[in-house]
Length: 165
Image 1 (cartoon, helix red, strand yellow):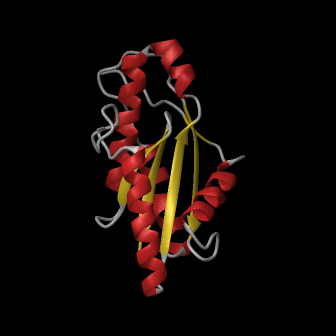
Image 2 (spheres, rainbow, N blue to C red):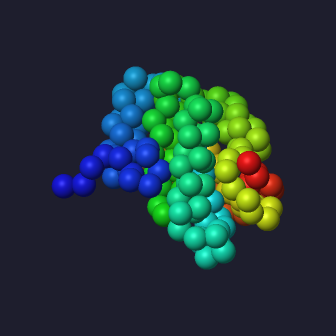
């Protein structure tokens, strides 16, 4: 049996995220409460790994996971999504709340630096999107499909992530 924590990112794994999302979706539907999800992907993670190695790519994943966790409210559930992504359940968050969470996350990533690196400028290409229950989908699968579709074409470039020192 697999553990609940992703060994590289140090956050909940994708299986646990799916279980939690299913439970929170049912709860939100039953009590007519808002619920949103946020997905984030590092679009150039493979390039980072090829250029700088697996160790640095894993550091980037952990750093982004930490920034994601810092940007979310205590009630949010942060988990892994695929090889290069993250997913967050935003409990009691309507569309406006999800957009505020996304803005906090992107601001936190904007100031992210990897300490103790002596690399040429490292650039992160990210895709980030949110979806809200009922407005974007009536169940867990529809919500995931909506946020995945919304991520297409969404790209944010974060430059100068590597910092000497």
